[in-house]
Structures are given as C-alpha cells and as structure tokens.
Image 1 (spheres, rainbow, N blue to C red):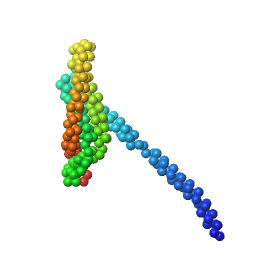
Image 2: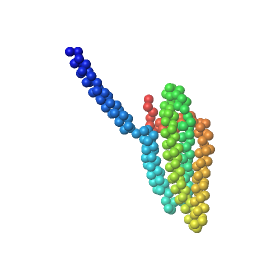
Image 3: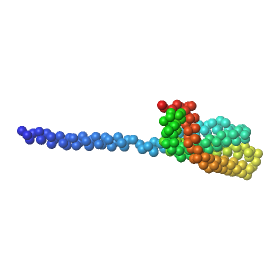
Image 4: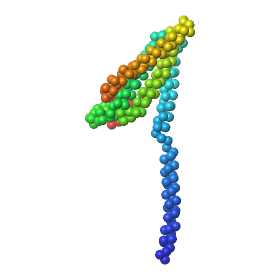
Length: 211
C-alpha cells in the first residue's frame, strides 16, 4: 500500500521538470524580445535628426531664396551660429554638472531645482541631443545658407570669384563656429550650475515641474 503514493510522486517529478523548463524558456524568450537600450536610443536619435533637419532646411529654404539679399543670409547665419554655440554651452554645462548641487534647493522646493536634477541625471542623452543633434543640424543648414551667400557675393563674377567667395564664406563660418565653442566651453564648465538652473527655470514656462 505504501508503494503506490511513491510511484505517483515519482511520476510527477518529470512533469514538474518539464513545466519548469517551459517557464524558463518563456522567460528567456521574453528577455530576448526586448531590444537593447542603446539601439532604441540610437534609432530615436536617427528619427529626431531626420525630422529636425527637414524642419530647419524647410525654414531656411523659405527664408533664403534665389533673390534674397545678402543681409538676410547673414542674419540667418548669425541665428544658426548663436543657436549652435548655445546648444554646445548647454551640453557642456549639463554634462559637467552633478545632481548633488541641486539637492538642497530641491528639498527647499525652489522652482527649477527638481528639473535641474533630472537634467543632470540624464546628462549623456541631453548632451547628445544638444551637441550632436541640434549642433550638427545647425552646421549643415548654415553651410547651405553660406553657399547661398557666396553665390550672392560672386553673382557678377566669373568662376574664380565664385570659388574664392565660397571658400571664404565656409572658412568664416567654420572659424566662428569652432572658435565660439572653444571660447565658451570654459565658461560653460565654470558656471555650469547657474546655466543648468537657468535653463531648468526657462523650461518651466513650457512644462510645469512635478510636485
């Protein structure tokens, strides 16, 4: 009589093992279905860059036409240059700033402190957006605006004049962009707390902080 329950228990053991193996396989499959975070982030940056490039290029084409005056092209170039350098300043300030600098302000419920902590904790992503995405797009669009300006400058000249004008405009744009970033990088790192907090306060006007 005692042998029958033992036989039933022994027969249930392989079934339990099969069930465990099936559940383990399901867990492994579930984990494999999720793509890695770096792939998701890279794909999102790709789409973001494409969309922003289309928008910036479309606006530049609307403003700068074949009959546009030189002053308008210079104004567009200045706006793009300032935006490019400003985004680089924000990127350097956010990356170099630590969230601990705003913990006391956040505990005192100062507006913008929690947002600044969030920015510092996501420094790598925000730095990539400001420095790589927006900065590179501004560089591409400013190159197109510079080509339009060079064409206006050399409109009445021959092929040599057009070549010289194109080289000079590209050299000036590149020097101002790279030199401006190098010049303001020191101030971005030195006054990183003030810059991050000021930008956090600015974003509150568009989206309120979570309490």
